[in-house]
Picture (cartoon, rainbow, N blue to C red):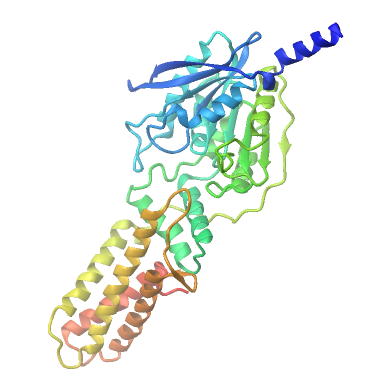
Length: 430
C-alpha cells in the first residue's frame, strides 16, 4: 500500500493536468518604439525542473488586455506550462493602420521576458486569429522560438478572409442574391483600395514557407470568421515539415464554448503537444480530414476602373447630373428624362445606405439587415427596382435622341453610364 501511495503521489506531482493551483506574476516590457506594455505570467505552483514556456498573441483589436487571454493562460499553466499573456499595443494600431511585423517585434519583446523566468526551458508562441499572421513572422525573426501553436490561424490574406467572413454573416442573416457579392467582395475591395482596410493584401504564405519550428495548428470545424479548411490547406502546402493539424468538431473560431469555457480537449491537446516538443519528441504529422466549408472568393487589388476614386467619382457625377435635372422645372416632353433622374438618384442613395448600414451594424454576432423580402433587405430591393426603372427609361430616352434637348441628352447619358455601374454593384443583377 505504501508503494502504491508513493506512486500515486509521484503521478500527481508530475502530471501537469493534475496541478490544481497556478501562481501569477505581473510584468512589464518595452516595445522597440518605446511603448510600455504590461502582462501577467501564469505558472504551476510546484514546478519540477525546467518547464515549457508559451507567449500568447492576441487576435484583432488595439489595446487588448492580457485579461482577454486569461482563460487560455490559466488552462495552459495547469497543463504544466509557464505562460505569459501580454497586453497588446494601441498606439500605431487601428482599422486603417496595423503592421504585423511591428506586432511580431512586440511579441518577441514579451518573449524575451518569458525566457528570463527561472522555470522556463524551451519556449514558443501561441497566436489566435490575427495572431496566426503575427506568430510565424516572430518565429522567423528569432531562433530562440522553439515551436508555434495557432488557433483559428488564417491561411489567406486579411481582405480575402474578411470577405469570406462577411459572406458568412449574410448567409446567416438569410440574405441572397447579388447583395452577397456586392457587400462581401466589391464593397470590401473598395474599402481596401481606399486605404480603409489595414494590411489588406498581406500574404501569409512566404512566412509559412520559412518556418523551421514544429507547428500545431488548431481550428474549430464550425469557424465562421476564418475559413478552416482553406487555411489548413494553405498551412499544409507551405509549412515545410513538423506540422500537426487538428480540428475540433462543432467548435467555433476561438475554441471557446458559449459559456466562455474552453472547448473540451483543447487545453489538453496544446499541453500534451507542447510538452512533447519541449522534450525533443516532435510529434508525427497528423492530417485530419478537412471540414466542409463554403469556399472563399479571390479578392485581387482593384483594376483601374474599379478604383475607389473612379467608383465614388462616378457615383457623385451621376447624382449631380440627376439632381441638376430634377431641380429644374419640367419642360415639354421631358417626363421620361425626369423619371431617369428621380429613379436613378434614389437607387444610388438606397444602394449606399444599404452597404454602409450593413457595415455599421456588423459585429462578431453577425449583421443586422432588417426585414427581408425575397432574401433581400427592403432598401436593397428598392435600390434594384429603381435601378431597373432608371435603366429602361434611359434606353427609351435614347430612342428620342435626335429631338431631345441638351438637358435631356445629358440625363440620358447619365442614365446609360449608370447601367454598367449598376451591373458592377449588383443593382441590375438578380
